[in-house]
Amino acid sequence: MLRDTAAPAPEAVKRVLLCSGKVYYDLFQARQERGVTDTAILRIEQLYPLPVEEIRAALAQYPNAEDFAWVQEEPANQGAWSFVALNLLEHLTDVRLRRISRPAAAAPAVGSAKTHEVEQTALIEAALPRP
Image (cartoon, rainbow, N blue to C red; front, side, top):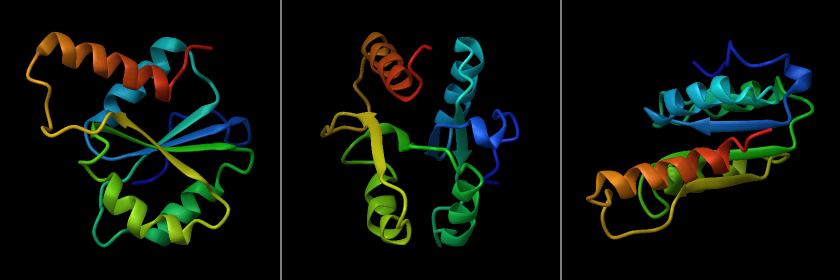
């Protein structure tokens, strides 16, 4: 559930991305296409109850990781981030988890396919910068 079987060797991982849902597949594809070799992507399939011990164990697999981020397609004020921030951060004593998402918004979708694509591209770029 939380292991990234396609990630590079655990000691080579410098960035760990946590996510839930469809964005995992977008991140996975972008990592392959860009040839990113220092990033693990962990998909959390169960948000409640939050599997804190599994997440801690999964993060411990990457001893050299320095950058940890929660990635979500939803705007900052929507999606799972609020729940994760309230319920996971207090259990991650050695991890500073940041958020990568669309800016806060009143609606969950922008209403324009073109704008959505621009925002999605920016989201992936923020999560997986080109080497």
